Length: 171
Image (tube, rainbow, N blue to C red):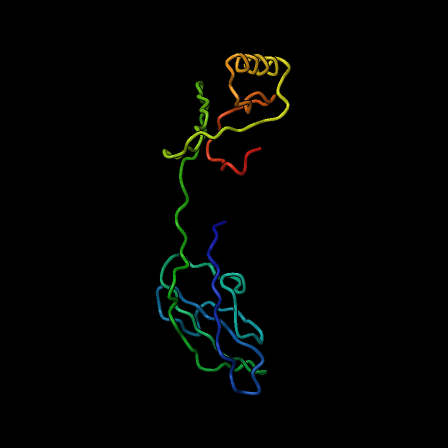
């Protein structure tokens, strides 16, 4: 079943005391009259189309509506009419839908979203492996031999490059 976008239709209540409800009439492609399709609405001053109008199923042409007030004896007021400023028609569905099996597939790894102006930022991760600790210690020993006072790299941390993490956000 097709789906039509809902619209709310509203009107001001009749000033007559004997009114017990309203009728909504509609005609597609012609002027609406008392002989057109209609639905009895009860004593309400708004409806949601198409939900509140049983049998309202337009075919795609222009729609004209009419609303009447109804008294306790079934007498109706003059028909207040207006054309719908929107369409109630639905598009045709797609045709010939199928699924195919593909023999080949290609896995694609997403590239990191790197701005051209981004520079790699060192990210320090605690808990380096025993072998990595030995390598760091060996580098530290080399530096000691070269009399290098900068011992920042001698910590048992693993350094990796990461893009886009500000310096204050390093782990």
